Length: 303
Ligand code: ASP
Image (cartoon, rainbow, N blue to C red; front, side):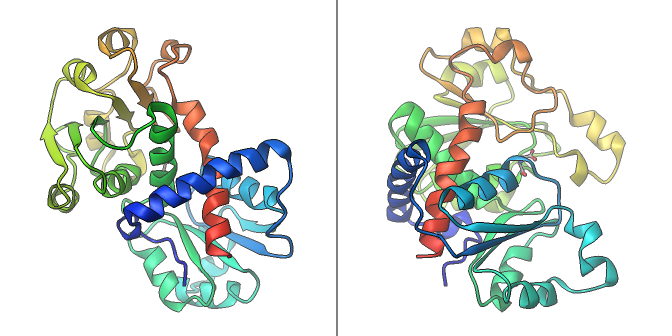
């Protein structure tokens, strides 16, 4: 079964082969054909908001000649409202589709779904847990923009505790040699201990750096993130944390010439719009890489 549940499950060889397939998918996307998933249906079950992940998965499936059925607000409009368990929903939907793309608000939901599903389940984010397909497209972005996946210093900036894309990215990049993470976060939202332990066990180094300017000078990649407002227990706690680290022209001035700024998006003030025109601002290109990468994943899951 080709479930995609955690970035930890990808081997180095898996990642490199998916990147290679994604590069071929960029060609297929440009040429407008490559109909190898004709007759297959992807079901997108989204219990939390999404723009990029859902639309790029849908676009990827359509570009491969497949079809899509989608519920974009499953928390309100699916039978979950009537008390149906996730497991029951999956047992029903698996009869309608060939692959399920699931976004859910609970950590571990994708693994629970995979446990009962007869078709592949691809996690599109499980609460504050993981977002493995984002990690794959982030890794693809670094490979595409910097032409390497080793010997990298990556500043992880913002809400490292609830930011699921950060967790998956750390799991994925830790597979490669000479990876150095600089954690720039408010003291109340640090990178979780188990994520740090995973990285260091794999040979990556993890260091706390409170000064964003210093991190900018030292990094090949600045991975900025949004403070995950929806995960905070009180608005007071959120207000205390937001806006602490902002990338603006002062930070740009301290960055290396070849370094890049990434962000899984959406941004909520943590990158000034004045930064967008700088060639080092890679976040919109990054969002576009989501299509070929998800084409590669769907092709693998449905092969
Ligand atoms: N879009 C990303 C996610 O779903 C990042 C974010 O929402 O801040 O995790």
